[in-house]
Length: 120
Image 1 (cartoon, helix red, strand yellow):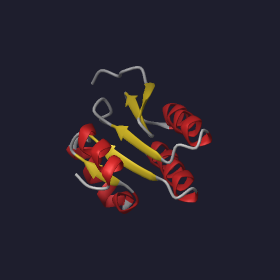
Image 2: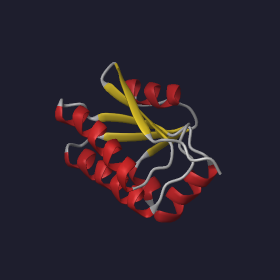
Image 3: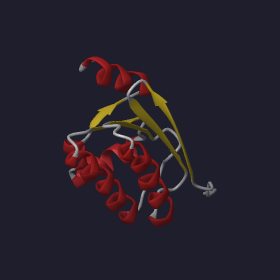
Image 4: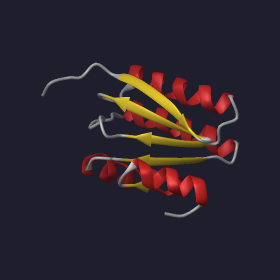
């Protein structure tokens, strides 16, 4: 299996931040994901979409760092939406009970529509 250098990019769409992690989500990469989300949270953004289209694997430390983002958003009554997840990621999040703390959509546009008007 080819390992992809992890990176995080993002953009602001209206009042929501869209985060694009790329590669294997582990301790080092998870910290950059937390930092990227923290920048937006620090600016008062309470709606975050994480598009997992280029992330196939996540380890336990990556999960714990994702929990940190969920907790940070919970503290400000924010919302996290996850999109474009592989079946493996979705099954993992369901098994660990993370799904109850996020709103999952097949594609990014559905999440943005939900955050904009409260429904798809």
